[in-house]
Each structure stands twice: as structure tokens, then as C-alpha cells.
Image (cartoon, rainbow, N blue to C red):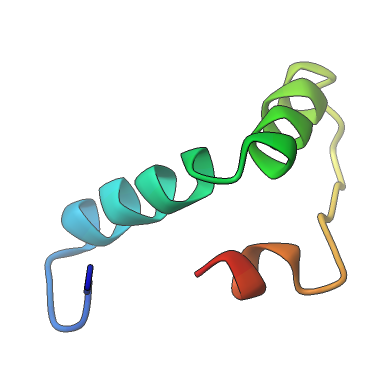
Length: 52
């Protein structure tokens, strides 16, 4: 099991990025909307939380 508990922030961020890449639909959504450079954007419905 992957765990980021009590790890430095840089390792936690890297682990989160790895986990999100394991969900192709969510990762595509995140990377696509990031390119829009919107000032306020939320990916809701617990999609990131449920992936973790």
C-alpha cells in the first residue's frame, strides 16, 4: 500500500500525482481543464478523494 503519511510535502505531492495518473479519465479531465487556465476551477464530487 502506498502511504504519504508523515512524509515531506514533496513526496506527498508526487504520490498524489501518481495516484491520479492511475485513474485515466480523471487524469485526462484534470490535465485538460488545467490547460484552460481558469482562475477558479473545482473538480468536485469527491473524485480526487475517492481516488486516494
